[in-house]
Length: 224
Figure (cartoon, one colour):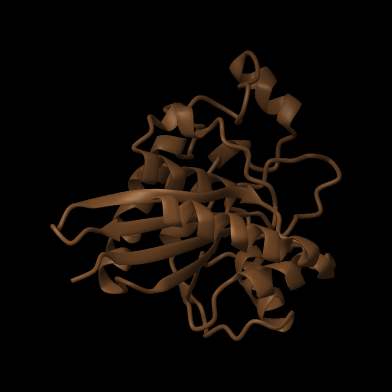
């Protein structure tokens, strides 16, 4: 009997044109998929035959389609509302300085502390609470498979919080760039114990980097 490894390949969606720096949260914004080299790198790095999961927002579905167009054979996505970005409620549409003025200052990493709910919105801790059951369910239902998940900065941070059992405020310290790859492996050991292995965080695979990244991951997994 061998361990069962379920690999989550988290991708943050492509950049959203936002010249005024307005908070868009769960707004259904379009994204810029013109970075051909990044999509080619992702299509080469990501596994074939994976399950594809996105949020129900346009920018994640369009990003997944661009990865497929760059050469990766992907199935139709499973759309999960729980993978949406944090709802910033009444703050959506405001510039970041306007938001900071309403709450008396800026947060070092995010728009607000992890447990602060914007008016008519949700906190980052709420995002974590709605995402965790979906991650647990899909990991259980598709044990041993690769799962490519195209989500948002907030949901990738929440996934890291789940894997590392981090306090929500600590998870906000992660930088998650557009079109970056974060890989988290869920492992069920031969004795039935479970744990997560963090293989990569916020990596931007270009075509020239793919073989080097793969080699470093193989070596890291061999030592685990």
